[in-house]
Image (cartoon, rainbow, N blue to C red):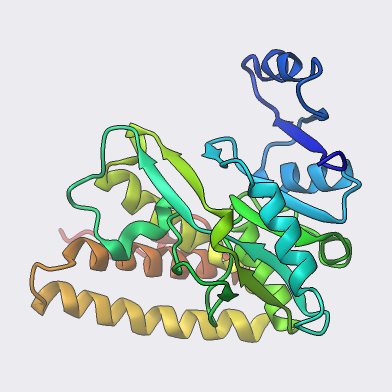
Length: 280
């Protein structure tokens, strides 16, 4: 793998990241350290791309561990499938298995695993199904794709969703590669119901940034309003099974509506302004 380049983007850290990277540059790996002082994962990914020279750009996060053969699997999948999809193969993605610092939470059901970056479509090479895309912590894209469709550096989260939405709208497809399997470390502080509810709410707030134009935002508001009613009814009349999932989905829809209300000019203090007057 003499053509392999490894780029570590230090995204405004205040620890010993640079010193640790320098240890690994002493003849162990062809490794490049790049400092990006503007916080934000989309900016870090874009900075890594600008400093790269490779035909394929593979991304992995600092809390993800890839096994031997990860890079080889990416190159092989691109090379062997480049012609099969008539130039529309934009990216690859592989399985991601969470590794919990304190063990898997007993309340964590399969329908809540997405925010712990779990992805597993099985052991067969296949296209990602409609509505599903690679996870940015374990993905690879063709260089020309990122050149023509760059990361949106204004985003502080959901940058992968926004990018893959644009690529999907342009007719591109993504290939699921089982040999790209990685493990994702989940620290103890993220293994709480409170953290999960807050994450769903934040993700909902940010949906306004991944929908461009009036009509997509209007459709998003309509769907969120209907889903809010549906999941509220499920909480009132549904059983206990998957109750936490419904609470999380409610937080998500509320976040969407709050974000869109702010987009369309309602003042930040709208809650205070629209409070009913006190009686007496």
